[in-house]
Amino acid sequence: MSALVLRCCSLVFLLPALALAQTKPEIQRPVGTPQAVGALHTVRQIPEACTRIEGKFTGDTANPYAMTLVRTSPTCQARAAFMDYDKVQPSAANGWKLNDLIKVPSASCSGQVAVVQVWRKPAGQALKLDGQERARIYLQDAKAQAAAGKLAALPAYAAKLEMEGTPCR
Image (tube, rainbow, N blue to C red; front, side, top):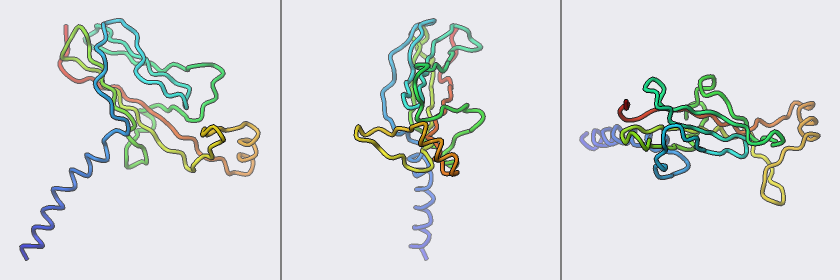
């Protein structure tokens, strides 16, 4: 009887550890370089979605950090979609993976850190790679697949901004 209780108790202690392991980001990176108020900087580039995440500390106590999404090029052909975080509400339960956790400290306020979570949802089917090891989608092929109702879902990304630490004046 005590062996059964011991097994149950060890499972109870393992479950939170498994949940934490699943929310560990796919990309491990150190804390970023401290940024000055008003200095626009690139937080993360996602070439497959033709998107760059830019941010800057504003100096405003109500909204201390501003994050914007920028299209990298008008001619870029996206191989992934960038979606609105609030609309898709990514989570591991919905098939999303925490791809990256980026921490950007403030240079003028040492206790303030902007934290950007980048979530990734893999495509419905694996895309075929070409001779250069790239997944390419050609317009004529996509039209033919759409007409046949066999269009593969593209991978998707979403980002969320949070602030850590104490607000500064």
